[in-house]
Length: 432
Image (cartoon, rainbow, N blue to C red; front, side, top):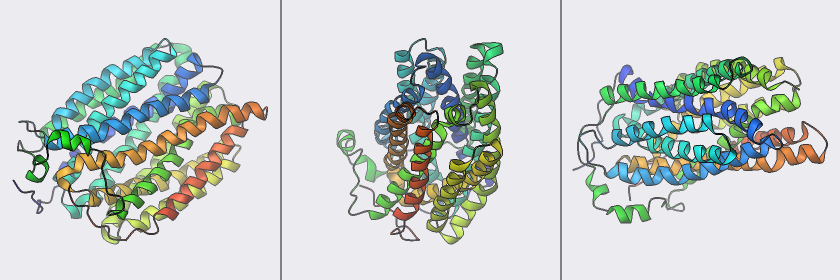
C-alpha cells in the first residue's frame, strides 16, 4: 500500500475534533502541576518542597521520554478495525484515570512517585498516537491551521485547568481532601468525551500500515525506535534544540510558580493557589489572542520567524517577572509571556508536522517529544538542585527562585539563537 499524499481538505469542525484530545491532556497536566503536586509535596515533604517537586517531575519525564517512541513503533504498525491510533488512545485514557486518583490519594512520598510514573506512562501511551493524527489526516497546507487549533485547545485547557485547580485547591481548608478528588475528576470526564469525539469524527480508516513501515520487523523497529541521523537531518536537530530550550524555560516558570508566590511575594498556599488560577486566566487570554492567527501566519509566511519572535518576547516577559514585586506587574509579565507561548505553540508544532514523514509520524513525534521531556526534566532537576539549597545558603526565601527565573530568561533567549541556522521552508525527513 502506498501513502496518499493528496489528502482532501478538511472542514473546520473536523480539524477541531482531530485536536480535541489535546484539551484533555493539557487540562490534566495543568491540574497536576503546579496545584496538585505542590499540594502533595507541602504535606509529604514539607522541609524541601521545591527539591521534591523538581525530582518528582524529572523522574516522571524519564518515563515519558522512553514510552512515546516505543508506543509509536507499535502504533505505526498496528492493524485494527479501529485504525492505527485509537486503540492506544483508549488504553492510555483508561490508565490515566486510575493514575490521577493514585496521585490524589497518595499517603506517602513513595506512592506519589508511583503515581507520577503511571501518569506519565499512560499519558504518553495516549499522546504519541494522538499527535500522529495531524500528519495522518491533515493536508500539508492546513497543518499550520491545525497546529493553531491544537494550540488553542492547549490554551483553553491551560485556562480551565488552572481555574479548576485554583477553585478546588483554594478550598482545601474548608472542604478538605474531597476538594482534591473533585479536581482530578474533571479531566477524567473530559478524557471520556474527547475519546467519543475522536472515535466518531477523527478516526482513521481501518487499513493496514504503509508498506514502507511494515517491511521492517517490529524487533528491528524497536531497536531503531530512537534513531535519527542527526547529521543527515540538521533541520530536525535545530528544531529539537529550540523546543528543548523554550520548553525548559517555560517549565522553570510554571513548575515553581505557586511556591514562587509563597517565597517571593509572601503569600499563603491558598492565596497563591487562587492568584495563580486568576493569573492563568489572563495568560490564557493572551495565548488565545495569538494561537490561531499565529498558525495561519505560519502557513502564509513560514514557521521560523514566528518561532524566533516567540523566544524574544518570552525573554522580555520573564525579565518583567524578575523585577516584579507586586501582583499587577507580575500579571503584566505573565500576559507578555502568554503572547509568546501562544505563538510558539502554533508555529513550532506546525514546523515539526512539516518535518516528520507521515508513514512513521507517531515514532518521529515521539522522538520530538524527547525535546520537550529533556527541557522539562532538566528544568525540574535544576530547580530541585538550586531553589531550596540557595534559599538555605543565603538565609532567604527568594534567592533560589530569582536564580531559576533568571535561567529561564536566558533559555528563552538561547532558543531564538539556536534556530537561526534553520531554513525558512523546512524539508521533510525521509522515512527509515
